[in-house]
Image (cartoon, rainbow, N blue to C red; front, side, top):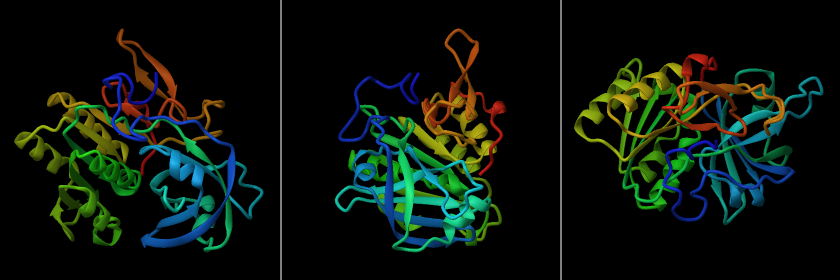
Length: 291
C-alpha cells in the first residue's frame, strides 16, 4: 500500500499531484536563508533543482546534521514549499534537540547534505472541488505546499490552523494567499478564536462537508480529526510524525500499525509507505510522537 492510494480515484490532477516520485541521491545544497519564524520554529530555504521540481506536497527531506560526528542519524523534515523556477526548497522545523539546534545556527551560504524528496505525499484525486486543511503547531509546516497546490488545481480550500498562543503563530500570510477561508484558533485566545482547532472543525462540518480533508499535527489532534472524519463520512488523509532511522524504508524504525481490509492490522513504514495515510487506516493508539 502507498500512502493515499487506497481511496484515490486512480488518476491525479496536474503536474506533481500524485503522491510519490523517484528519489535521487544526496545533494549538497547551499542555504539561501535560515530565519526564526516563531519561538523555536525556523524556516530554512536551500537550493536543489531536483527536489524543487520533483517534490509533492506531504513529502520530506532527510538532512545530515553537520559539525557533530556523534549525530549519525539524519533529521527528517517536511517540505514546506518549493519554487521550481528558482530551484529553492523551503523547510520549516522546530528545535527539539541537538540536531535541530545545530541546523538553526546555520547561515546563508553554508552547505547541507540533503536526501530527497522522500515518502508518499498527499493525493489530490480528480473531481475534488473543496477541501479542509487542518493543522496544529509545527504540523502546519507541510500544509503550505499542499494549500498552494490545491489552489493551483482550482480547489476551494478552507484552512483551519491551531496554535498554543499568538507568539507561536507563523505562516498566516501564506494561508491567506492560498486559501478561500482561513480560520485560526489559539489555546489562550490571544489570536483568533479561543480553543482547539478541532472544536472549530466540528462546527464547520455541521455547516458544510468538504470532498476531502487533509491534516497534520500532534497525535491528540489527529485522533479527533480521525473521529470526525469517520462520523461525518469525509475522506481524510493525515501526515504522521514518527522517529526515523534510514528514511528510505530499510531499518523499520518508523513502523506504524495500519488496519487492513479484513479487520486485522499490519505494520507500514512511515518513511516509505507514508508519511501520508488515509485516516480510516491509521491506528493512532500506536503513535507516540508529539509535535
